[in-house]
Image (cartoon, rainbow, N blue to C red; front, side, top):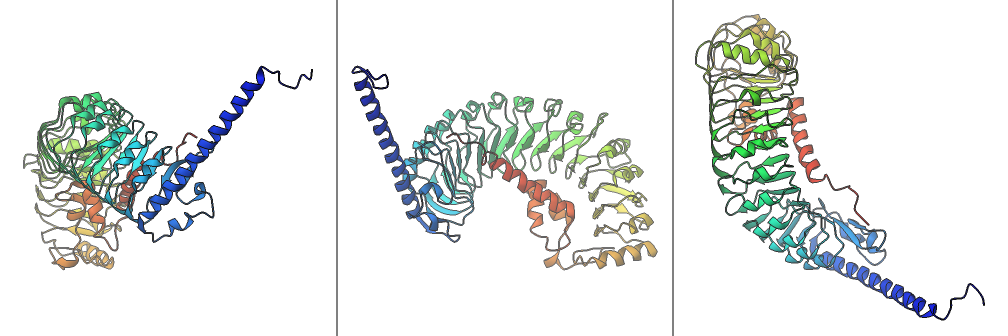
Length: 524
C-alpha cells in the first residue's frame, strides 16, 4: 500500500475539509464583493468632489486600491475609510453600515450634510469615528452605542441637536469624546462617570447648562477636559480637583462660582494648562497652583479673585502665559507682596505674556520687574493704581514687543533703556511723556515698523484699522486662548514671532489629539 495515499477512513474527512475551505473562500469573496457594492453606494451620495477623490473609485482597479481606502491583508475587507479634508459635499449613505470590518471612519473637514445614518451603529468593530467640521444635522444616533469597540468619537462643529444619548454610557472603551460648536440640550450627562477609560473630554460651546455632576472622581485616567463656553453654574465638585491625572483644564466662559481648594495644583503634578477665565470664582489663588512645576498657562482673568499672590520656593518654572486681569488683586497702595510675587517669577525663563491689568495694584512699579524682562514679549499693567515714573528696567528687553500702561497715574520721561528696545512695537498709554531724546528715538523707531495702530503719547489712530494687544492678548469675552486665536485673524502684518508659534502650537495640539490613532496599527 502506498503510504502517501489516504486510507479509506480518511477520505470522507478530507472531502469535508475541502468543501469547507471552498465554502469559506466563497463567503469571503462574497463579503468582499459586498464591500465593493457598499463603497459604490457611498460614492453615489457624494455630489461634490473638487479634488477628484472619487475618480479612482471604479472597476479598473481593486477597491482596496481606491483613494481613501485601506483593507486588511488577510481578507481584503475594508478596515479604514479616510476621506477627511477632501472638500466633499453630499450625504453619507446608509450602506456604510455594510462595511462590517471597518475600524476607522474619518470624514472630518468636509461639507457633508444630511443626517448621520443609524446604520453606522452596525459597525461593531469600529474604533475611531470622526465627522467633525461638516454640516450634518438631526439628532445624534443612539445606535452608535452598539459600536462597543469605539475609542474615539468626535462629532464637533455640525448642526446636530438634542441630547447626547444616554446609551453612550455603555461605550466603556471610549478614551476621546469631543463635541463642540453644536446645540445640545440639558447638562453634562451623568453617564460620563461610566467611561472610565476617558483621556480627553471636550464639551465646548454646546449650550450645556446646569451643574457639573459629581461623577468625575471615577475618571482616573482623564488628562484633558474642556467645558468652556457653556452655561454651567454652581461650584465645581471638590472631587474634580482631586484627579491626579489632569494635565489640561479649561472651564472658562461659564457662570461657575466658589473658591479653589487649597491643594489644587498639588494634587495634579502634571497640570499644564489651567483656565477659569470669565466666571465668578472668589477667594485667593492657592500657592500650590501658582507654584505648580509643569504649569505653562494660567488664565484666571475676569473673575472675583482677591488676596495675596504667593509662589512658594521652586526650582523649576515653565510658565508661558499668566493672565490675572480683571480681578481684585492688590490694595491700591505700595505692596511688598507684589514685589515678592514678581521676584519669584524671575526663574520663569519661558514667560512671554504677563497680564495684571484691571486690578488694584498700586504704588511705584517695582524695580524687580527687571528680572523678568529678558523673556517677556507683552506685559500689561494697565488700569491699576501705579504712580510715579516708569522704572528703568528695560536693559535686557530683547523680546519686548508690547507694553501696556494705560489707566494709571504715571508721569515723567521714557527711560533711556526703553528707548533702546529694538523689538518694541507698541506702547499703549494715555499719559504725556516729557519731551527728550529717548521719546523721539522711540517714537521714530516704532513708527518705522509701520504699525498703524500705534499710540504714543495718546496719539489717536484709525479705529477701522486698529489692532491692540488688548483685543488679542486679553481676549475679552472669550478667554486668553480663544483671544489668541481670534486675535491672530486681525493680524495682517508685523505679528510677533511667538504669537505665530503659540497659535501654531494650539493647532498642532488639536490636530495631534484628533489624529493620535490615525496611523496606529490596525489589526488585520
